[in-house]
Image 1 (cartoon, rainbow, N blue to C red):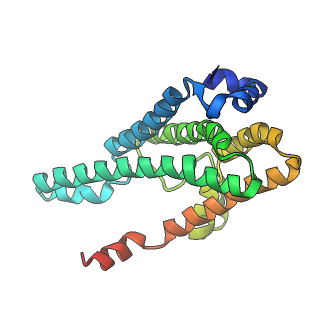
Image 2 (cartoon, rainbow, N blue to C red):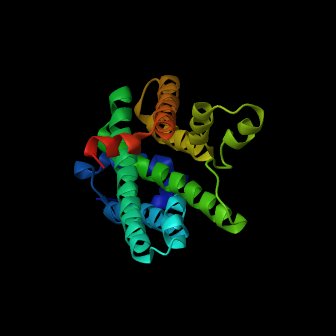
Length: 226
C-alpha cells in the first residue's frame, strides 16, 4: 500500500496520482487520519465562529432583557446548529460536489474525493482567516474581504449579485487550480475539464446566493407551525 502525505503530495501531485492509480481498492495509508483531521478542523471552525458570536446577534436581546436562562438555551441550540452546519458543509464538499464532478468528467469518484480534501482545507482556512480579521476589527460584515463583493457594494448594491460575488473568493480560485492540477491527468480534454470545474463553482455560488436572499428559515418555521 502507498502512503497519503497531505502536504508532500500537494507539492508533488504526480506522486499522489501514481499512488492512487496503483493502490489496491483505492486504499492509502494515513488517508483516514487526514480525512478525520480535515473533518475535525471544519467542525472546530464552525464551533469557534459560533463561540465568537458570529451570526448570533439576534440572541443578544434575550440577555439584555434579563432572560439569562433562555439566552443560555438559545446559545446552546445555536452551537448545535453550528455543528450541524459544519457537518453539512463537509458532506456537501466531500460527497455531493465530488459526485457532481464525477458525473461531469467521468473521473473515478474515489479519486476525486482524495483531491477534495485539499479544497475543503483551503476553503475553511479562508473562512477562518476572515473570522480572525473580523475579531481583530471588533465587528463582522456579510461579505468577506477575499471576494469582490465589498468593492462592488460601493459601486452597485444588489443583494443577489453581492452574495453571488461573495462566494467567488480566493479559495474558489485555489480550489479550481488544485482540482485542475490533479484531475487533468485523468482526462484527455483538460480545457473542457477546466470549464466544468469553473461551472461547478458558479453554480454553487448561485445556489448559496439564492439561499442567502430567500427567507428560508421563515418558510421552515411556517411549515412547522412555529
